[in-house]
Length: 568
Image 1 (spheres, helix red, strand yellow):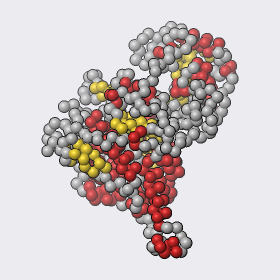
Image 2 (cartoon, helix red, strand yellow):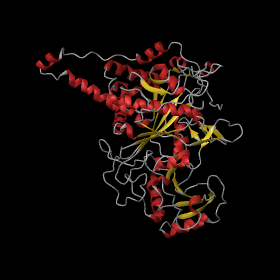
Image 3 (cartoon, helix red, strand yellow):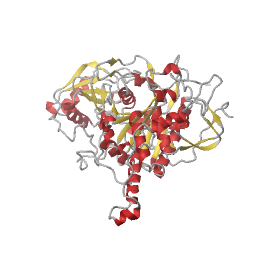
């Protein structure tokens, strides 16, 4: 049996009821409403109590839409006194800054949010909820990583999970205080990214791999999962046989469920999300599929709006969520979280697609049981997200309440096919003759499989000069890129970098902010080894490959296969 993980599933809590109750009841209560009976209130001219009930339901619906994938707890959006308690951390500690998602031709902007599940065991509640004692107070691991993509027109949502056993090259990450974590010289397990300065390095790692601009992150720990599952009254899950996640040597989450559907909450919900031994082939891949089943089921429960109508429960859940969650500075205010929740609410469960990054087992020495992104198919999924193509193959549609335009964008650009520069809504680009451009030869590609084309930087610099960029010059430094990109150093150079990309017919995604270039720098990639323009990419896929193991949010028939030897 293959095995993996830097940190195991660990032991169970012995007093789960006390812990989950303590977490959920950590806050104060909401004072009871005044006004007596509904009849008395109507006689006094006041609004009927039903109006207040509808308001609570409306609030609940908005909040729960934010939590479709189970990354936070409901209710806190509407308790403004918690504003100052929201924990924040830097969004991106890496050198490459992609500038955030760009609006499409109609002024609609997609959203990419990285959801991180931390296994931190740095307080009593989290320690009691599981894990070997030798991991207490140790550095946390990003054991759950899911990229949520909300389409520009708000008609669909795609989610891509990365198995925690994925081996990647880690980028250089610099903490706000100045501590530097150098880029790795070899492959590192992806869940260790959290130890390189915090969630901002996990974001940087995803951006380096996928070239998808990540707009926000949300990170939650064990006790947050428990409090959320308790709040909605449980989540239905299904197993094909009786299952008990416990090995002979005591490993496993301890999950024990009978065949069929069970409604789980509290510590049992946490056990489900952490179970590896007992699902499918006993690897982290099976755990990922179980997490998808749980999240889609939770989204359906949220939509029912039948559980969270108690203001006292909402208030205590709010406090628990704040204590368990960390967000980036762009989400650290109540109104920002509320706006996000309203956008997420527009997507019906039937247009939510949960997928796993296509992967292969690593063949490198010492990496038995670990995985790497599958060549071709992993990039196909990433490209669909980059280009805002729905993973369910259904394309765009009419959203429930209409898509929201980007701030500062009120109409489609005059040329819808031209790339939108990162600063297109704030500052115009300079005249081409005034824009210095350094051209680097990066035609060998990242894998170095091909020999770098001689004099390519000179040839492309001359081409740019012929297009009016008379300050273009060949750089003596070289690079290695699969696709041609334009990088710039400061925000003031963003519009000018966009103008260079437009002149060469490059897509908006090719324009990137980076701390590793002194100014606007064109990297001529493997896709432009000859000719006057890069080789156009093949047509984008229209549906996720089967290797992504897609699960639709409306699929109520999903049921986990059980690993032999883990039944009872």
